[in-house]
Image (cartoon, rainbow, N blue to C red; front, side):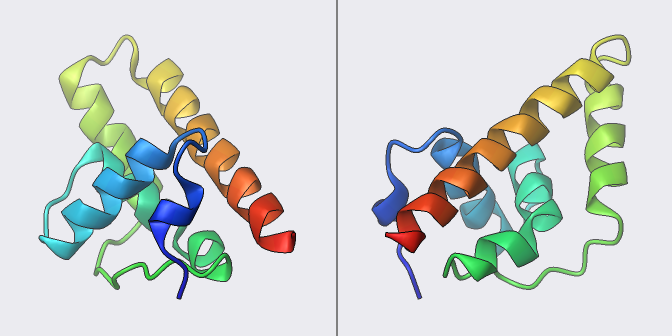
Length: 97
């Protein structure tokens, strides 16, 4: 397994770190739902993503964001998703070296 420390400084590494910690502690948070959404991709770069019984994490994330502020939920969902994609791309690039 790869350590998350190998990707320090990558965009979105803070979200992934928080999400992994939250999943391990059994907390459903914005960060943990993001990590669940990208579980397969994150595992493909060697990260140990805990299994969690979260059905439809993208829908749950949107609901969580909409509960906080329905007017900005869509934009925040897209921005958070893009940060996660940026992290995954950086991790895949680093792993390919």
